[in-house]
Length: 446
Image (tube, rainbow, N blue to C red; front, top):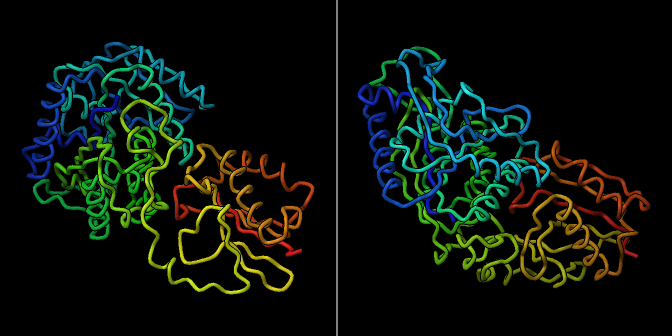
């Protein structure tokens, strides 16, 4: 069961030089306050993902029971040494690794004396868990993992937590904007490197302060591009997936300050299954993927859709034209457009995603999403008097071209290998709803 979630920075400045800058000092004070709360909370596990623990081949899980060493950060060595000795829960690390492998991920455990623990992990655990009151588990950040792989790692983590049955604190160690000052600066006058980065940071913090974790995950790519976010802000995909891809949280921003030009925030999220969702602020199609009654209970969290919001005003004022095609058997459009239009002997379909027509459920993997997209297209074509066999042209939009193309292609071939429509496949940063694939089709009308 997940008790609390924290997003924290991992620079050594906060731990070793808090007196050199008011913001650094404020970050440390917030860190230490949270640490005292964790120690009193009765938590039984701290699960930590640090964007500073880079892995290249798959995902690594620390299982050395008492990792002990002296860290000198390679970039900030002037601030001195950080001796550490942590208390790790090896059993959970093994379970998480096994769950990741079961999802098809490359995963390995680490149990090696002297294995270098990264600065972000060291800073976070020394400030959040100074007395080692709670055993920790640490997972690496694969620098090549894209969105779907990172989300899969998150889902595996949630399965491991649920199976383990211990009260868990989840910690994501990441900066917000990550544009460092490249020359020496006066620490007392540290500032965010650019106004644009600062504006983006504040917007992300505003959303997290409202508990909108999944919404932040949806804009991570744009944030990564616009504000040079830490590792593209991929850590938030892991966190949102692990926590059920929902906005059912109460949020609190403890502190926000620059650290050598980067943007650093400390945020607390508390699961609140009874939270009233402000639908107009949602970035997805209206309802979260997770049912309110299931959040934080350890049950499967991808199969039920909460009560949908009222129909948007534009639906009531959409004109019905003779060549417009709508069907109740396909998911409702999320904007002012129809499922399809007939022009002469051709049918032009809008972009069609994998949402379930009645429940709004989104399948969990790319194969299931691809199949659901095509089945949704099938019913639109059938209700228009056509069929999949009459598809002439397909445009495909994938959010993870590298990770999903082959698996998408396998399912696509089941439906269209014999039909041979022309096709264009486009990689995109995101889609309007939290889906990984969308298809746009032209078909013969009869």
